[in-house]
Figure 1 (cartoon, rainbow, N blue to C red):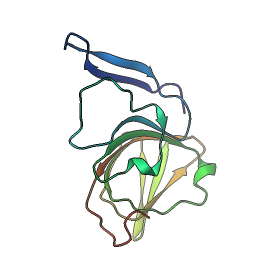
Figure 2: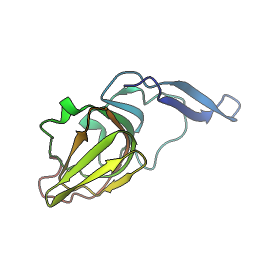
Figure 3: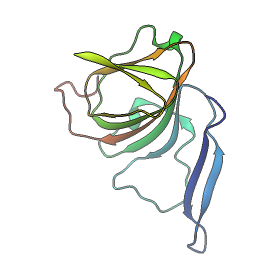
Length: 150
């Protein structure tokens, strides 16, 4: 991952005042979790860091929300992975060009474009030589397909 993604997490200090709990850089590559809340509604108390870890599918629980930064290059998306999750995903393309592949067509996206993925079967493919980066927030949703998470 490009070291340019800064993660600032707020919370309360020992006196109950709003403060910055974490101010760091999300390290690593591919999909990095900026924040994960294992329950909804989220518990904003405490100061435990639930982010700055690698993303895994187990974070997409029925009552969890997760925010990730995903960086991909063309070589990683030569054979796009078609999948569907029991989530509502808010996607913002931060850098590069990406193709959203769907069962009935595709859409080309560039930096600044947003997608609201409502749990449908889809895949991502990087267009061009420049790596692409997107921010994705996953929220639990009722299953759209009988098979659940694909």
